[in-house]
Image (cartoon, rainbow, N blue to C red; front, side):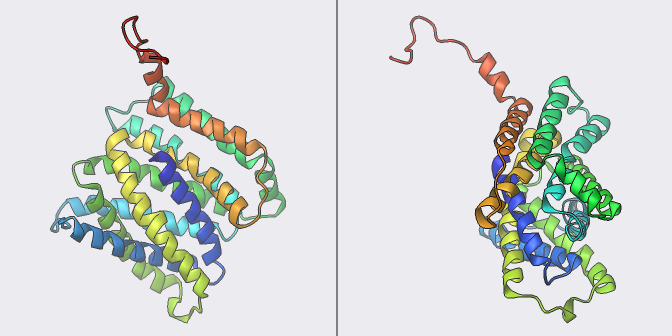
Length: 302
């Protein structure tokens, strides 16, 4: 599920770069949230679930809608105009670091442990290796505005805050949380779009609208449905490891669909990223604790 969510998020970065050719950043965020809410509402009705009545829980939904949606999307979309997609990926990959610190400070059962710190560090090294040192150098030489980098770090912080806060919704069905998040995020962006952009004056290409639609259904609706299931199962710190898979997914898709060459270091980076997931999820601990078969049990040839 970590690989699936990270892969869907990575594909969305590619689609955002496509859509930015004729659609403005905040409008992209509003369209993505609005379109993502539609299939989720249909699935919600199919399963016989309902959104909760007005109350305190909607305050938590609003936090999720801003952190995982409106604010993060605006920062990412705006930054993607000025920095390359690879750097977007490396900066989003700082999310587990922010999350680990916030979870240590504000939760009781996700304190920082040596294994968690090692897993986060290994995954971040993998992302650095994947993108290569030339990424930051090219940013400096191209004269890109430094506040776009700060905006991406702000988006990573938004994701971290939402992941930690989302723990209070662990008793709410993931489908309900995912749906309410899209609705609150879209509502928050409506006045922002009308104030800072002119969406009705745009002349978007149909390819760009299609890119937003695909990103909304798969990279948002489906991805966040899986995300909240993971959050309830493995906690805030480990769920943000999806951001380590995201840049790798973007590189793979860029090689397949855009003809970009996949560097050899990508395979070493993949190994480190997978190792990070294994360390954090406890897969390796499970292998070490697995008892060896005794003399009376069937072996490989049994």
